Image (cartoon, rainbow, N blue to C red; front, side, top):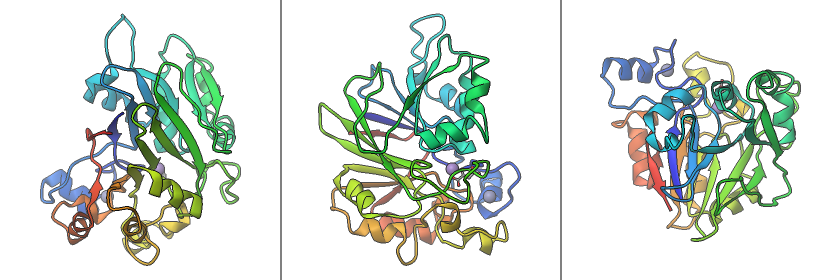
Length: 306
Ligand code: MLT
Ligand code: MN
Ligand code: ZN
């Protein structure tokens, strides 16, 4: 299978429009060695010639499609390689790009859990608004571990895992998370047996999540924050990484500790990186610590072939 990283930044992108943190100012001025990034999304297809699945519809989707020719195969006057969209949560950075797909000639095939469909019909009624344009053909993602397929994408199967994290601020149950607000996805190539675990928003590693990580050949997981207090320390928010459903990389119980318990051959990639995260600076000590631990930092345009 082929995984294209369309967007590797967390909500806000990098640089974020109103931010002058060291990274954002540094990428603008060129004083910090780092690459700009668009908001969180990947495109997965079984091979170079096939249509694929868009995981998350970022508000940067139009720029991402322009940047990746494989998304526009130009077989007809109106065309796309996006056979369907699968949502990992109902947050702004993962769902508002659906508006940009409204010119489709037929209802957009959309896979999401019930709580996400509810949030996108109530708190942020994107699905209702899209009903005035192409409409959506909604498919329910169940949480019982039953694999599903996406029509038009032969040879790939998908299995959702409920994750501990948080729904969006506009969710009617923001402070009372339910199973299915956030999911991770095991993506399997039925021909080669290769499996990827994708979880851009991951608040805690429970035994089933670790089990999924240990079975995958490659991981694309939450790289939002380096430290739990990254935002409070910069005076940008009172909330810690864990408060908003993101496991930091460093510190006790952080992502690096979990990665260290995995089989040596597992490919470890961080995605959904917040603009404040020091790992974006390619010359930072934090980035060097990741490199020493064979942990990769996703960037836009990165291609993973398994
Ligand atoms: C998150 O992942 O916590 C959210 O996407 C943040 C946001 O988009 O504002
Ligand atoms: Mn996000
Ligand atoms: Zn910033």
